[in-house]
Length: 161
Image (cartoon, rainbow, N blue to C red; front, side, top):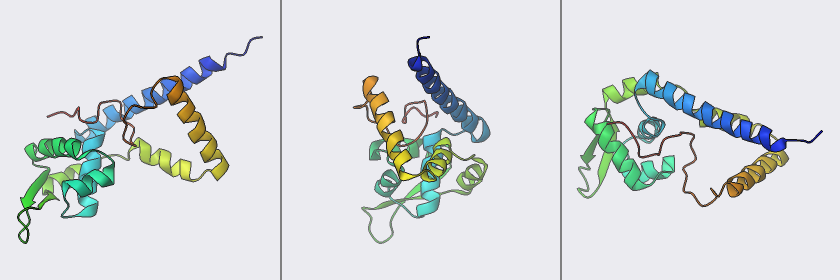
């Protein structure tokens, strides 16, 4: 009997893609936001009185992407940007009451659950998984694709208005 490991691997990859897609749709249905939008709102909530640069660093997205997301969040009155009273060059971002209310409805992110389980693994298994995933990415010619450390099937800046 010929082993068909590749079929099992492709099934596992498809399951990951499908789980990511379903979770993304669930988040959108529950709170009306994309995963990157939820992450930016959470960063604003956690960091308080925060600049785009700090949000960008916190969520591992480019400043341009965060700015695009903030524009959409502001249009929906979920976040607000104000110039600093002490330094007019600095623009700080705040969560609005509506933003807090929406954030309270947001489910746990899929990557957060993954991280929690991953951190519980022994170091040898973490290394093995990392190596295997990097190899799969390479085999799919994806190792040079820029990607944020979050699980979402949409492009990060493909957010609804």
